Image 1 (cartoon, rainbow, N blue to C red):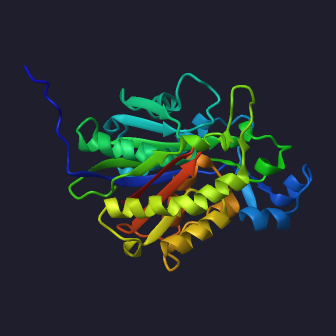
Image 2 (image 1 turned 90 degrees about the vertical axis):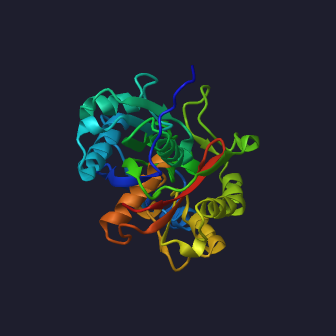
Image 3 (image 1 turned 135 degrees about the horizontal axis):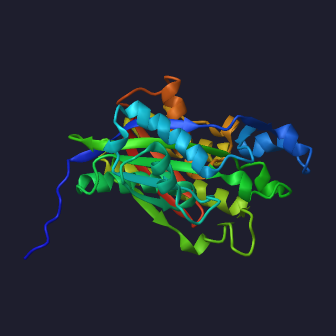
Length: 320
């Protein structure tokens, strides 16, 4: 007897988006009162003016649930329609249970598959690719994809190299079947030879980053990943309407805008007042652009991310 495999639709698409931004705003001057820095120095090197920091009682799961609830409400689906939850995070406080199962329980989802994924700042793109593949192969019909981080818990607030950068938040998307693909093939990979450039080790509770090395890698290697993602989707960068890059550093973003020749496109610049929120940064930035009317339903956007590992991923999507 042969094993029978399920069949799925021609493609998948993002149906809706949601985000959550903590209420506490921390400006550069507040950080400068603790470490040897100042507002101008931070702006020149990162582009960040302020960032959002979660309250002591707010967990990664709390923020993930808030963003996921908004995405689910916007999709028009019932909780019972979601049959898979994928939560991307590298900062969950608890090893068990996973964020995906906690969110599923809080939203009343009906026994979905649920798991967490850690690809650091590239996590949302990895999770989105996994969701699209699950739908296309018939293993799921509607998938809730979440990127959520509480990086303030693993930031050394006396380390000037990192405390000026990292922040908290969550973003989510509901992904469903489509006759015409709305999520392109993923261009992903990792560079294990540089896995010591961004770390949070068992022997050290804090995020550590070799900033100059990460900057050099991103500005010399990531554009090729973006072009490859466009090629896999049968497009060129000039066909894009928007670039939604992982919000790591404004100087990296501006370098990639030039390399990809998308200066006249809509560019997400969430980094300025949100900081680096790792796996949450792309869905948060995409949600804000959509909410503000800067991108419209049907627009083509390149999502492009990189993070600890080094992991990287990109795909072209249609805005819901």
